[in-house]
Length: 581
Image (cartoon, rainbow, N blue to C red; front, side, top):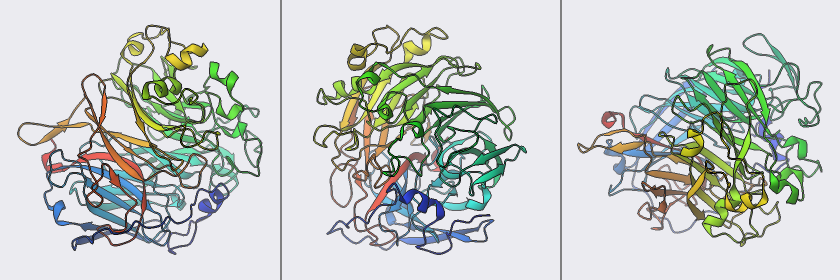
């Protein structure tokens, strides 16, 4: 059984080696200069010995500002830009009007593994939840106890030997019982057949290949079930390319994962076969760019039933694109489920296609998808040049607000791979009002099927409407990839409770260094959202070292030392347990 070499600092895993061909492991970034030394932190280390025999450590470096524990925090999962330095979770003070608002008050460094490629955590954190943080390249998941925030305790580690049928953990959805579903983007540890927990067998072509899987984890990161994502009978080989080719083709490379426990439904979107996608050695990438969404019945939590695999349609902009890889349906990165029980639909967004799709009933055997929004319309609202469209714009984070009023979406911006110079494009965060679409129930009319609707929004009355589009300029060939909703509000007595109406969002500007979609400027920024869905950057959320808006992760000094720039990916709002009611 293959092992990733976490126990030897600096050594690259097999999964990392697989992805090196497409430039995912980047070169070093230069350190920023002139940062003031941090005060001496309080250091607290916790450890966990995983099933691979390795003892993993998490060391808190808490500055004096972290001693006021009754606060709201923005947890940021970041990888060091120097592969010889540790990755870490940054705890940022996100308490409005706090004297240390925007300051990094604690960094929790991970050991002994290095160059993890810190990726996603869960989408939303609730009181009592463990924190699940995925290491994309080391095929590892770290689980933290958050009850003593801003300190974090290492509660468990799921190592590469715990998931032989899948690699590259991506996204997490925590259930009410504290367990979590995780999407594993890549194929099994080794090429060949792999037997899942329910006894079913799928054949894969190896790490970072196909097919990926879904894994159910307990509160300590132990694997409860490896769940097949691929259809047993195989899938359309003309649509689903695999390198090397599989006897039964599959598009199962799940990235985003969403769960509705009320409906016993889990939805995952297929991304790409990662290790070969955009490789110069493969001139035709089209059938590696996935177009599919998968739906499971999760009544049996450890043995979900795969109900459907459905394909996103192309839209009117496809006729204008120079390559099929930029068609609206390509690279379905994220799904998003409404929260109210009466709303049975699901959204999905495409990264290279720059479009948002909707199926009004995800519970039926064959969900009926339609394009309901093109990012081109949001670009017009953001004031982008007229030649900038959704094609290749790297649409990323997608979430429905708890009250089902808004759909939030981040867009990194058209990359140089698409052919747009950096001074012609921009990233953005935009907000859609989706109430009319959801109210249409099983019979929505909205359908982007005309070119004018690409630029001006759908002509049907129930189409999503842009309430705000905030351009986020980043000339690093990157932009805002991930986001988080602040799902908390402060009560008059100074405590906190969960809120249905979202009044604040955060973004992080980093994808994967050296990839086709760009690196990013490594900023973490905050945005206020008013009652009408209008965005405004919160310029009081400032870097304590540079004094400029946003927290700049391209710095020299951290609470844990002068380790240089870092790359923030997953972000998440959380509140100290003692004040969250």
